Image (cartoon, rainbow, N blue to C red; front, side, top):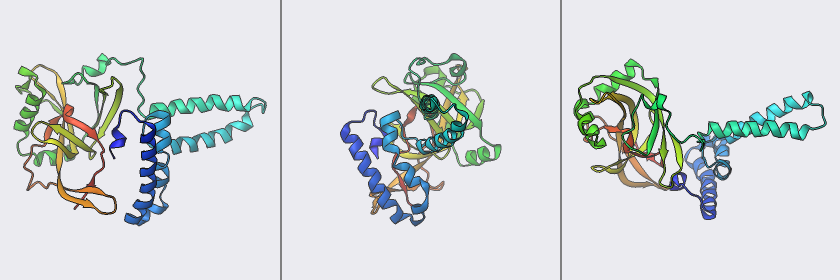
Length: 285
């Protein structure tokens, strides 16, 4: 659903979102019968409130409200029973601030990159900053991944060329570190800032001159040192191919994941090639 990635919402957008969520509540149990008793469907009905209040679609609202309810019940016996409303409002505002931060909020007072972090990983483009790589990948998973990349060095060289860094594209270092997730700040076209977090097995869209816009899944995240002594972040992906079919109930296109045997496209890209994250995608085995 493209609305999830819109930078601005109008009244019509909210109405369209509400209708989509209502349709989802009806359609999903028809496809996945065991969904009917799960809290996930109920949580999704709070997304409209999330968008209006916090400008985010992260599902923290239900958890926060349950926490508020439990905390307030425990607080009341400890008050003087006179200014209970004021006492609870103070705590309520604090919890909303916590929720705002947990939803990856950006503080407009701090729009410049922090040098202590950006010195670790350099951004190849101006609209991406504060790149952070976290939680090292296990040696076993890393080795399994590398076995499936037949032309690692040549693909990495192509990625450096994509970044148009001049002499930095000449690779001489074997200094590579692998991670399970990364986060960075991106500046949108309307000069607003958003925080992006990517994990292994996330669905993303790659925007590349040779491949146009295509769906992929993240298999690896790593940093590599160029010959300018700076580290750059890269991703390893597997491609989805369009089946040219549509799933009849969910009304979304079907894709299949390329296997190693029929993998004919490169799998290493700079982090700046990512166009968007977690778009609607239905996989066909």
